[in-house]
Amino acid sequence: MARPASGTDLKLKAAGRKILQEKGITGLGVREVCRLAGVNTGMFHYYFGSREEFLKAVLKEIYAEFMLNFKAGVAVAGTPRARLNAALVEVGKFARGVRKVAPMIFADLTYGKKEAFAFVSGNFTEHVKYIAVLAEECRDGSAVKGRSTPFIIAALVSVMIFPVLIGGVMEKNGVKKLGGLSLEELREELFSDAGIAERAEIALRGIGL
Image 1 (spheres, rainbow, N blue to C red):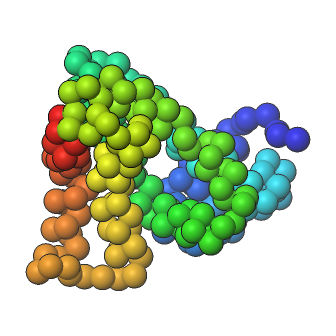
Image 2 (image 1 turned 180 degrees about the vertical axis):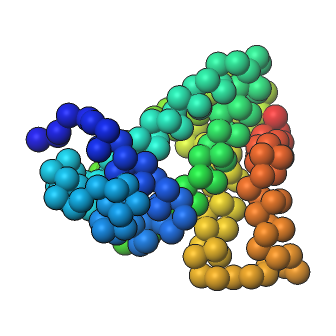
Image 3 (image 1 turned 45 degrees about the vertical axis):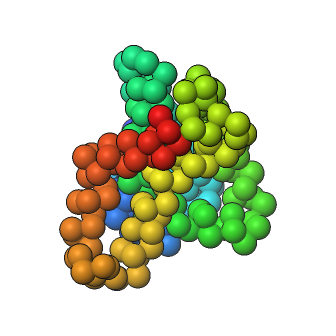
């Protein structure tokens, strides 16, 4: 049974988010979360029961915040193309924020872990429905209007996510350079707000919008 939220609950989740952003899923240990939050392990287990349930709670919270930003970004845009562009930018920013976490989640999905698939499909797919609607609004003006909606979504979203996933894998494995550029230079080019906005434009132009 879920426990009622409290200051202790919030402190633990805030600590968990900080560790996830810095070290990813493998670096998320119960003791380190409790130390950073200033909370004893007994209270951790009282509120969350296990590391796995805690991780799910933190990821759900991160995704909920993303959806608030996603909906707000799409709402202020004008034309269907502008709304789709705004949606892609928000996806890129979200991917940037979870780049140290996402490779482990995708690894679990790749290896067919049903619990991971159930969690992702049940908690991390709301934005895809919005993008599908936006893609349909833009379909007639695109160069791929004869293709299915999943084809269009794959063509768009992969441009926003794949470079960030690869960047996260590189960071995790200590890669210092790629293509003559330092990792810091690549971060600026790929992960900056300007880089994300440029990739969104590239994705849209890639389908003729």
